[in-house]
Image (cartoon, rainbow, N blue to C red):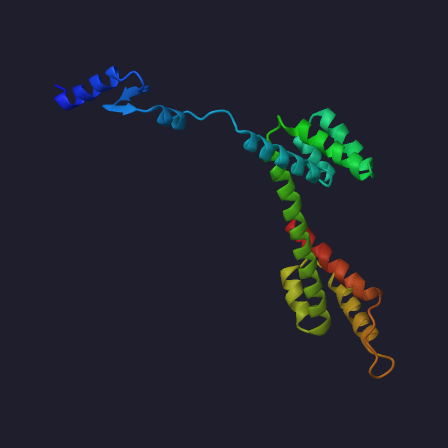
Length: 205
């Protein structure tokens, strides 16, 4: 049995013609609550923000690597627009072309594009780290006698005779001909770096 207070609430709502809504689980849901429960279409502000993001992603597509572009399977019309934009040097013309690219991207899911951009960015960061590590190993091999043994333990496939010869040559090149003269970095110095970098990349792959 429903309590009289609950029944009185229903009668009051029915008699009051200005009240609109519905009853749910013993509670009268007001119109403003209905609006809150039912999400409406995106606002103009939301649409503008989404369009702006698509245009920014379009800018990033201009510098994306070809292999990542191919993986995205973008519409042919968008690919043509991107190619055309790369050729435009006039500021206003490029701006209009970027707006066109943003318009073409509106129906596309932005997430795969974000992932491709992130992959390219992180890849660049990883490459920078690898080069830095190769430089550290090169300098260590030249400066420390025991470093060669450490390197060969970590990278046993290295041509040890070649590396030893390069180290000897670099040390010889770095001896100043005139006291106080800055050490010279010749061909062997660059070759050690290349050898180290290639070995590190080989093991990583």
